[in-house]
Length: 493
Figure 1 (cartoon, one colour):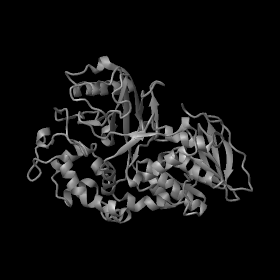
Figure 2 (tube, helix red, strand yellow):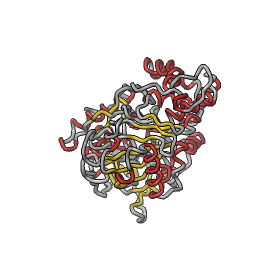
Figure 3 (cartoon, one colour):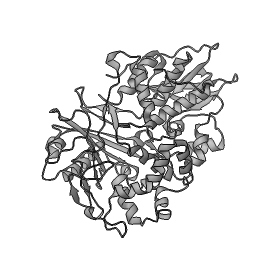
Figure 4 (cartoon, helix red, strand yellow):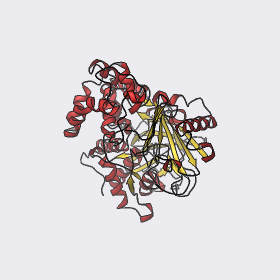
């Protein structure tokens, strides 16, 4: 059940350091836990009526497994994401059994994950990382590639390019990251065409199978780091829904320290150097509260809505330029988990199509259950833009039509369908996955994360692990360490 919060804002004690945190996503809540550990006064303001930010579990009913992840849904079990497991261990050491965060395996690939490209259906395809299915060459999927690329799979081709960079990152992440930045001015597509000398049709084939349309126009650095994560063999998710993580964080932070539905409308500096926030709740007149320091743990799109001082030119450029991929998810609830009952069942994982619904993601929770099932369709970048002008009904109709084509002759998806919920992050919050364009990491990363006086910034977009929970944790830890001048600070278990 969601954690309920009071609408209390503590009176400012001018004799003690008092800090405001704007945003109750993972970065904001993690910052709060660190400050709480240091016995520092703080208050968290969140514009939405829930905590979690881009962790959002939508529950169709209160019954078990009747949910889908509208935001974050899986975590690689790798050293780069160990901070998430450390956080879970810390939370579980401080919470009652009912609030414990339990992890379960997330299945990235499964036999029965379909490939439907160029009107060719392969019901058990070797299309993704670490799959043991049959080799799906370009020719088998209707692509005509020149030699020496003919007869190879998308996985073979991509791995051959990434191998040296992934090896360097694994052996020494900082050193490997420095090597990546040498090509930060390149888009991944430009790198493949000019450095690797790939023909355009080869690039398109690999992009269709491993990404979304036009994602390879993003920076070389971003795409390599993204694939570093996806070349991880073991993954996990949170039993009962990903939102149990921010809810457990919020429970420890305390209801009196969080105000939901509190939008920051302005930031200004008082004559004494303190920062004043104007806080509007449910359209009411703003109240004003002064703090010694503030942490803005919100994406640039949210920051642009706030009346605030202008900062340095490079900071303002970073705020304007930060690119967030459009991201669209549609969760659909069906009478049965029909995808687990067809001749080639999918027990988790995801199917790939070149339809409007580019990925069809099957749940890792409740495998084999006789209860109704929930799957989701997932698109981003240019593919997500298709969904923007459609109504919710039109989005559901389009997704059902895609599923009907994917399961033609096997399942009547219209008969199975119960209800759906669509979430278009660009439409509602002008955000999605932080993935920079060529050169932006080099040009703006340091300036974007740097404090402006007693105004500090946190969020996954300010880390080296864009789009991930670990990035939000890393950024929050770095920010609070700088603020508190304690570079050994960490969250106690």
